[in-house]
Image (cartoon, rainbow, N blue to C red):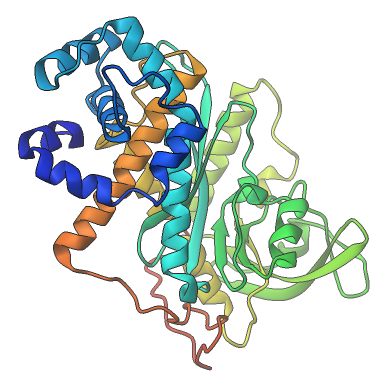
Length: 388
């Protein structure tokens, strides 16, 4: 049963608890962002939020939402009136999501060194088989909570610069985030990175400034061997020092990677890169974490933890049905997605209250000991299978 139907059953007392979890100043923001203009049937922010949740969490049509309003609330709204209210509330609902996430960061300001996973997922409109919207998220690995969100159209690519970076944070990202501009931006803001390298478009140099040719430079590695070396890259007028951790995969994951490369090439009607077969044998990880506190096997282990955000996306789509868009109108789409994200945040907070689980203590050191007050010995991260 979805969240909106549950709150209707428990009544106004539970709904009051939900409103208590909203960020401070939400009523003023609703007026400022013109979410509430003519207060006839929908007289308060709570009314508007409840209407949005009926539409989004109940996956209702506009007509069904209007019928729900007449049967469950003292509102007499037509379908056009519901549409108008939901479209007007889109910017305010986005503000609620962003402010709720900012509030979380403020409550855990002492834990800036925690690990964050960065990724994006595709959301399609009704009848579409392609990419219509992209939802960009940052997931707190320790608390397993959403920390940053941005909704873009299909043109919105994966960029590290979309999300705030607090000094000491460790960002985990896949090959989509392997861009020199984004990586240098995180480093300039005091963050740390564990990013899978896109070997085709990320030029690296050795200490003498000579290019490192990938993947040929590591062709001599044995299966299962891990190699770690310092590398440099240039962006603008600066030269940045990093570490390149290389792992040669075993036969089965190599064959699967090569099969995917050939499938994507065939789908795009072009030939694979001449060195694609050799590159499929390796995993290239780029990081700035110090080798003495985070050895190469732990770098691989950290990157492997990216599966947590894949699970979060699956939960958003399977439990809250984030991917079941019912609209084409951009503002109505924004209302739908932001309402579901807000519901996910509220559910996390309600569950935390119910279990009385405050999570890790502020100031706890990250697994690789790079944060303030971190111990000399890193916390061990278990790796079941380093082939990722």
